[in-house]
Length: 226
Image 1: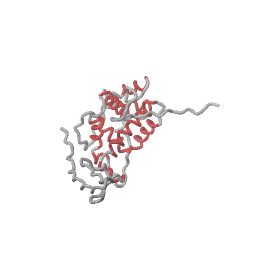
Image 2: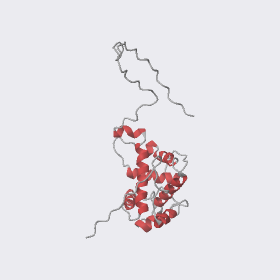
Image 3: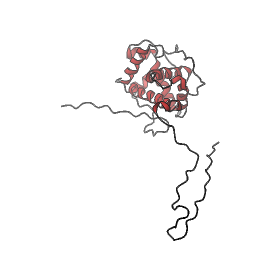
Image 4: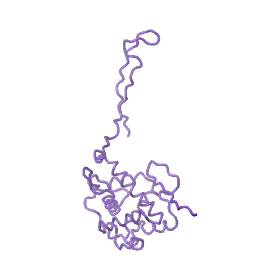
């Protein structure tokens, strides 16, 4: 009896994580060809209109690519009470800042991936949708996201997880979202925590002599980096 086929889950690496292979995305020949279609020429997506309200300027993303990230963020992070909208926290520029920490090759692959996700020609051939992602209805956008999530093509499954991880890490990393998730924020830094003295002032030490008063240590100033 044949066992059930198991799919190995690919890990998506972001800046600061250990990358086990050369490429940020792992894909075969078909995946490389698809990424080339959605690459720097933006084949089939020239009608992408930058969203109103984008703060910019961007260092890695184009205004069109930032718009794709914004539209994707609105579908992955629907409105919820107490949570700010992606545009309210300037999420596209936060994403642009994260991508700026990546190697140039990683930036290129993410841009190709965004181009493929937005691409109208690829959407028609793979999903039967003859529209760019940003020009689609909310229902059509959700259908394209599900198609990428459940695709048989490794580059699309891996790409979906990469895009979602980028969006969510930048969104929940914004201080404006911390209150909504009950996160108090990082602990304060820059000062030196004074340790409790081993013996209280005025008591007897192990050698029989009165314990000296604990010296007062002024807090250290935070290190100033150029």
